[in-house]
Length: 108
Image 1 (spheres, rainbow, N blue to C red):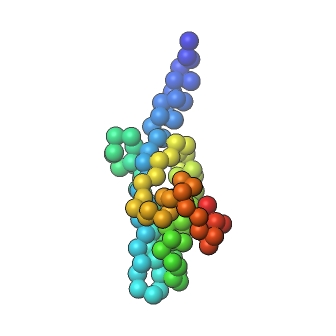
Image 2 (tube, rainbow, N blue to C red):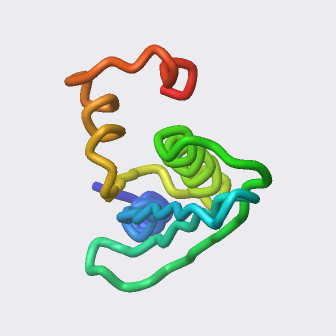
């Protein structure tokens, strides 16, 4: 039989399941912006974050940096089950092992 404290802990864990959307955008030659949104399993907004990179980086490097930052932020917020949505097919293929890019290997 599950004790009350175990049931409460499981409920907290269940509410920490989420989907994260990551976005990056190029802003001229001075920098790139990024943002992420956390939603629960029902699509309800939970938390978000955004930032700006100084300097200019290729799109794939910006996407990888955004992914790493979103992952670290979500762990710091206590989320343990992570599902990412993204729109960069190159990065998705790299993560799934269906492509190779030596320039990005240190990110992934």
